[in-house]
Length: 225
Image (tube, rainbow, N blue to C red):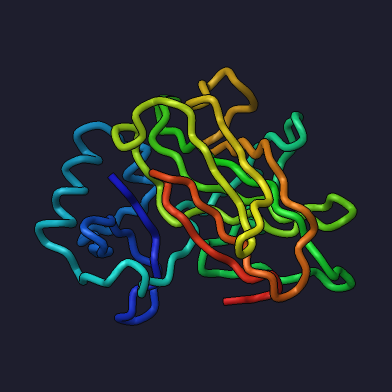
């Protein structure tokens, strides 16, 4: 299952949706993606089937405006440079939100990998692409998540590989060794593992992230929603 949060073209509010056959199907219930993932199990599968059977709307996937699939209420633990740090929740962005250059900054690097999302019992509910943008001084500027949270049944339980490139130039390749366990690091609803980093990217460069079964996205440095 692929779960997303997107901006509905009918009114512009954020809405829960699922991806199937190249389209986003608007979920007809009031629950958010984190609420459904926390419930997990049969509840999650039933909600997915409900979205396909009775969608509020159907949008071609690449025409949908993707928000962060989850909006954390607390700092996000992230493993970068081999150590754990925390990213402020206010820095979380969706794949269609762009990434702005902080004032006085001319370039950003991107630490890439995946983030695991956990249910209310501490089990892994799914994974999503993650990209931590940092200034030359290593200060976090934004954390891009998305476009979708993919449930474990779609991932096969093996390693996840994420690549980053600009045009034909390969910049980074990150491999995460399967789903992190709750004891692998700090606790929380979501944790990011970002083992590879690009060079500094200047204004206007377009970074392409490919996560295989996790999906893909492209962001132009300096762009905003």
